[in-house]
Length: 327
Length: 261
Image (cartoon, rainbow over all chains, first blue to last red; front, side):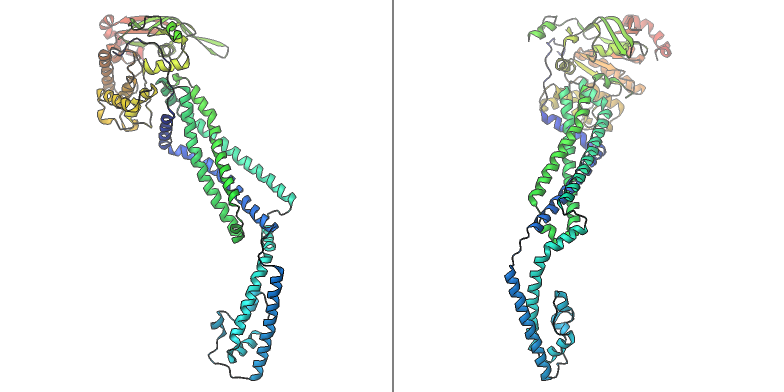
């Protein structure tokens, strides 16, 4: 018998899994609305993440400029320079000697074929000078094949010296690149740009927060009747709050993760284009990871905070609202 | 549970004659500085298993009374007893329990959860009541079969006709074997024939389960099957018609259709 008299009991709290299930379905069905909320979070977090990423990368490069790890000592460089000087004079003497001998040049000789480049470009490319003109060298090698390995040997040493020089001037070059890109280098300017960046981040987060609040409020208003019905069916206030918070939490996590990926990718691409391998060699992976964790926290806290008031509004709604057919 | 015992005036385990009793119920709303007396002292007693229609023009206090009976609103003065429990004494947890177990709601606009299938919609009140999923599933399926929707169990509301949606809503209202079914214009959004089928279904369930059905309606087909009609006018009970009187006056009611609307 359905009408058995029984005393009034207290409605039990439902397990969280039920709220999760209903919230998940609701997101899937209202995909466009969910995407609207999520896209706001994605934008804000992508912005935050890109700023943090480029900051971490530039910090890494700055640290390297301040303390570059150069493997070659001054002595080694000097030794290499001396070696090249010796080889240069040897080559010059050998060429002069060969010119005196007046041998017939090999008609099949082609310097470009042997060295892969026009002879004149080789020393210039290395930033070295030879006390010989390219045609002189060419003629000498055409007539005296023993000069070819000698010149090749000179090239090897010249290349080594160039590599050492490059390594030593790299910090100066990177500094010049950063200055060209408008990255501040002195303490005061760094501090100033950090303040500006913080303002920007704050604004972006505020905009995202208001966007989420608005979207969630709309979502609540839209579902007045549904919420009222649930209350008529015996849903407790706490359950309604859970439902909306879980829904926003889902959106928050998804939006944040997408935002982090987008921001990280874009920022890394931009910095790599500007600084090439410098950016990757000096990447502070730990800082990047910290930035990601921070973004995740900010994103989730932001979404849940934005959903708190709307959820509370939904929970406090009177079940009578469900009866109104004109909503 | 001493507090609960105090709230229950009838002896536990015995069936009280009345499912709903209102004693001198008044309801005052405040709108700015103005006081609106929606109900000015209503006394009604509804017996177990009765089929009641509440009639009245808009602004008569009909909706307020209806909400009061449904445990959706509390009186400013007077008492409302549902199954001999004074609803003013209940806290929000107890009110939620009562809405879940004692009252089944049927709405003009069906109010099904759009994201859930028919089966899940019917299961919802049982889940709220704390029933485990497997049992709820079996019971929901059984009730859906009773309202002849066994073949639409896994359809979402949007995939069903109005009549089918209202039958799902009826199945949902019966989910926790309530003592009262509150139906707010249940045929208001349905065509003539579908409305007729819904009324018949409600009448059958009323007989079958002995449940009290209280509906606010303008539908004379609904009035025709009612045991009693309570007319509300200007915040008071205007008149109460019994079925016996009704049969004689059927012509009048149908003739007075214009006035009723």
